[in-house]
Every structure is written in structure tokens, then in C-alpha cells.
Length: 320
Length: 320
Image (cartoon, rainbow over all chains, first blue to last red; front, top):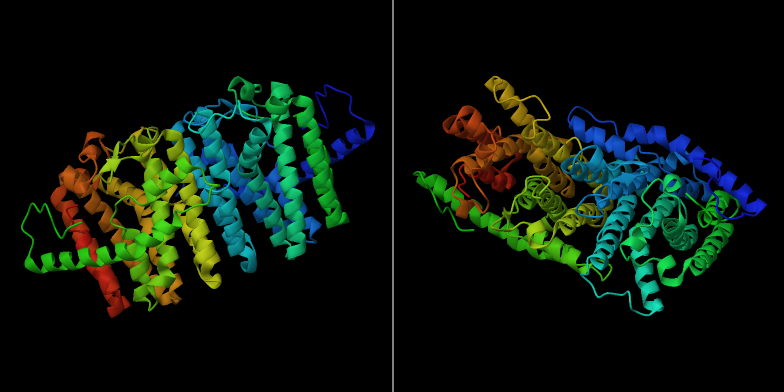
């Protein structure tokens, strides 16, 4: 990833600077976590070779490693070490990787391209992609249960299980699907406020919950107290909403080559997104307000939360 | 389930008696665990309604509840209470339920019938079935992390994650699939010993690992020492092999109405099973030897392991 390519509108110099800083901080996260992620998806001969290949393909695919960054920076914000937070970073990335593999399946979103490469079921086959996702999920829990300090490992598993479960990640995905397939009342003609509430509810579960889990797990790894965990959660709620709107804006406005996946598909499927419901300008304003709220929570966490604060400002302006 | 229906060969009176005893002990397990399983798959409004319906359909489907029985009886064998072992029983059953839902998918075994009812993707749809399995897996870890005593919850999550992961449950399924689809060297003309080794390796992971996990989790819930856990593992290894051969025998000889799923499918797909490799009589002898080994391990565990011992003798003679 480079600093801020493919900008389509002028960006003020201080934002460019912040962008370059976040880009290099994210690059440091990748340098730290990717060798550890690589070791996490190494198996004995008991794991079927094709399955392992698919798991490595999915987990080691190029990505921003946002969830690892949140876990690691939350730990730093609470005075903990990156090393202690590595299991949290790896586990949340494994859950994310599994959810992408399953979301892309023909029976789900039926996507051929992900992070600029063929999706897992395209590169391998559907059965292997299903099993790959299943095994990545189990591996996330194995990582936490084995590598988190004993005092917090069980709580860490509970946090991750809730974030990955029927009331969060999977529930949000299921409701998203239900709307797309017409299994729930059509909201396209509903008042905007109702549409916004629906989208918020989906996003809170489908993407927000795992961000929150990454932050909480990072905090737990650092032995954070309740007050700091509450601030991390406040940061995470605003950050998660800002991220999702920014992601929708990328779909509405983005350049496929820079984004690395098919764009314009939300509008094509008549899917509710902030840009389609309230327009691009209003959605961007909403994202910026939420990004500022997240940055304020980071400021309250103190100077060690500098990376979280920068990330919140950067996320709403990203173009890829 | 009734005592011993659909017997096709004479069964000695003492075996009939043991069978009736196991059947009523399994019925007691179901009476104990099913209300708890029912409560485990109850969710807030954050879980999508169709997803919840599918999860309940899959988790509460009629079944023998063998894994709960193993967890509960292992706890009993180690002087623990059934209540303490309930999370272990529920978690292993949830993993089992999820694996059936995913194994039945069109991209996998493409089965229409399971436990005498339409499979999950038939009763709902493929996307919901995929998400249902995903959420059941997360729920298994949530159950352990939340409800096991703090001292053993993290270890319990680790035991379950390993049993459910790439080197066990999913790895076995992936290798099974690889053989079926010709992704690995064809073993149908290989020496019988090689075929037996392959089947053992598949079964140890695909079914045996979760049995072992149920036993170990039950033992952990009872605070069992290392010696007892070792005996439980010895029981479990023999039991798991005996179970799989008995299951293959049911497929080769069983009556579809009594078994509750399509039979004869292994032979139809040219799949390696003990009955097809070494013949029905030799496979039955092998199952009986393994059942006796398991019963011997149970005897070493002492009088509180009576149900485990009976189960081992019963499993090799079951006809449904």
C-alpha cells in the first residue's frame, strides 16, 4: 500500500501528512503481525494439504490488517506490549478472514474477486472454501485459548465468540442477506430515519462487533481496567460506524483497481447504504463526524492512543 | 428411540438387556440435556430470525446425543456432577450439529435427509445453512467460555478448538472429500493394510476427535486428574473407532427408515469403509474387539464409569 494514491479531490496538507503517518503505522503492524499470522496457519500432516493451502491463501491474502492494528494499538494505549496482544490480533484477523471466505461463496454474495485476487472458492473449490472458513474460525479460538495469559484467556474466548456469533457478525450478515433476498419487509420506500436505523443495526453487528472485540481483546491483553475498556468501546463504536460509511463511499465512488474488489455493486443490487440513502455528501459528513468522535475517545485514552486517534481521522478519508 | 428395533440377527439375551439399559440411559441424557440445549439456542433480537430458526432446527433435531452422553458420563466417571458437565455436553453437541449442517451442503455431501428430516439447506436455504453452521460453532465456544468454571474454561476452549480444527474434525472431512473427489492418490487398489490406515486416520479426526474432546471436557468439568484423563482418552480412542465401523456397518446393512438417513451411499460412491475393504464379518469382529477394549478402559475407571462401559458394548451392536 502506498500513502494516498488515486485521490480524486484535493486533500489538505495536514490530512495528507496524517495519511502518510497512518499508512506507515499500518505497514509496521503488517510487518509485525504477518510473520506471526504465517506461523499461526502452519499445521501438522493431520491437516489436509488442500485445506491448509486454502487457509493460508485466505489468511495471508494482502490486507490492511485493520483488526490486528486495533488490537495492537488498543494494547499500546493501555500500556501493554505488542507481543502480549499478538494472539488477539491474530485471532480477530482469522475470524475476519473466515467471514470473507464464507461471505464470498456462491450461495452468499457470489463474489469472484477479493483483495484483488480470485476468491477462495474460485481459487480452490466451494467445499474447500466452506471447510477453510470453518477451520479458520476454530483456529481463532485455539490461538486465544492457547496464547493469551491464563487469567484472561477464557474471557477473551467469550468476547470473540460473542462478536463472531448469531447476535453479532453472523446475525448481521444474516439480516443483510434477508434484506437482499426480500425475506424481511422492504425498506427502500421507508423513511430515511428508519433506513439509517436498519443500516446502523446491520453495521454494528456485521463489522462493528469484530472491531470492538479486537479493541477489547487488545485491552485485556494489556490488563486494562474497566475505565479504559469503556473508552476503547466508545472509540470502537464510532470508529466502526465511520469505517462502514467510508467503505460504502468507496463502493459508491471508488476505483476498482485501487479498492481491489468489484465496486458499484451495492447500487447495482439496490442495497441500502448511507450514500444511496442520504447521498454521498451527507454520508461523508456523517463519517467525518463519527471519525471525530472516535478521535476524541482516543484523545481521552491519552498519548499512548495516538495511533488509534490517527486511524480514526484517516479512515474517513481513505480512497482504497 | 425404542429398545432394539429392526434386529436382523439373533441377539443373546444379556446383550438385549444391556441394549435396553443403554437405551434408557441415553434417554435420561436426552431428558437432561435437551432443555439446556434449547436454552442455549435462544437469542436476543440481534440474531436474525431465520438464522435462529435454522440454528434451532439443526441443534434440536432428534439425535442420540452421544457426545453429551460421553461428556456427562465422563464427568460421572470422575466423580463430578452432571450439571458441571452440561456446558461440555452442549458445546460438543453444537459442534457436531454445525458439522452435520455443513457436511450436508450441496458443495459437500449434497444430502437431502438427515436424522429423518430435510437437511438444513433443504428446510431453509444454502446461505442460511452456511451461516447457521458458523454461528453454531461460535456458540459452542461461547458456551464453554461463559459456563465452564474459570479454572478450566480456557483449557476447555483449547481442547474443543483443536478437536474442531484443521488437524481434527475439519481436516478429516477435508481428506475424506479429497479421496472422494480424486484429489489424492486412489487407494481402492492399495493393499488392505494401507486402506485400513487411511480410514483410521480419517475416522480419528472426523469423528474420533470430537468424542475424545467430549470425554476430556467432561473430565475437566469434574476436575479429573491426569491419570483419569488418560484413561478417558484410552476409552475414547477405542470407542471412536468402534463407533465409526459400526456406523459404516449400518450404511452397508442398515434399514433407511431405522437409520434415519440415506443408506448404501458409501458403496454407491465407491468410498473406502471397513465393510467394503475387509468385508462385513471382519469389520464386525474389528468393531467388537475395539468395543471390548473401550469397555476394559471403562472398567479401569471404576464403577462410576458403568455407563461408558455399557455404551461401548452397545455401540458395536446397534442397528439404528
